[in-house]
Image (cartoon, rainbow, N blue to C red):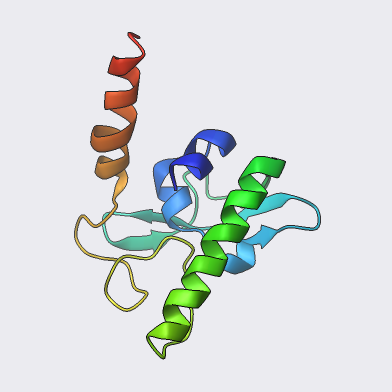
Length: 118
């Protein structure tokens, strides 16, 4: 998730709103059409969908992530989630603060900025 966040410049809610079908590995692009914010799945902040580039490294990492999801789902006798970064409740998003925007900001972004001395 962190790599997707940093390599694409997507907003936190946009990363959380991604589904597998939003990824195009052939063209190495991501179709951003949803935003997850405060327990509501809506449109991106500007109200418009857009495409962003996916680096080779990110494409590799996301492919491995999806393969891991598939293996875990198969081992549990479940279908793999369509949500790219689901919570832990059977492929649904956790509420109210699963891996919400605040988690990305306070547990990931701010500590990294502080560690970098910025």
